[in-house]
Image 1 (spheres, helix red, strand yellow):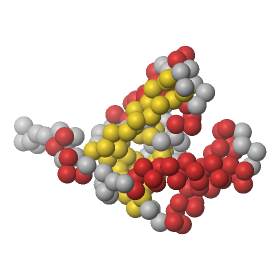
Image 2 (cartoon, helix red, strand yellow):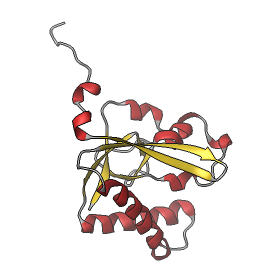
Image 3 (cartoon, helix red, strand yellow):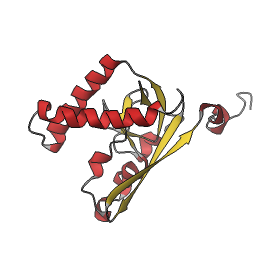
Image 4 (tube, one colour):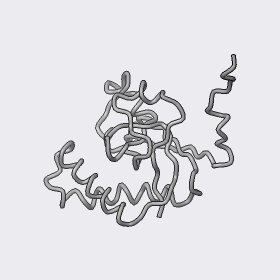
Length: 159
């Protein structure tokens, strides 16, 4: 089974998201946060989180890039409990037990997205508001296409 972890190539997420996800934390789409949003909600850092942010499971922060990697079933169980608790705390779910099936479904959808990709594949998300609700699309960057030279700043320390 595969899931995705937050990855950073620079510190831009620290500036563009109100709460940035931590490097290495497990992530999922997190589109549920925006289910009742309107154009009026889309400004500043909230707009960036809506437009391009993956949801960090530990921090509830956002990140622009995630990398596909293996996850153990025991880790998935812990994440299901963590997400269910999040639904109780922030979305008014009546109990963790009631929220657990919904949390498991969110994680299963993310695992399904990740399972079709090789490990270390990078993913980005793009969202838009439509009359029918939030539409998500994903961009896939294969590991062999994600060379460090795309993201690193090259130079010499001797200059």
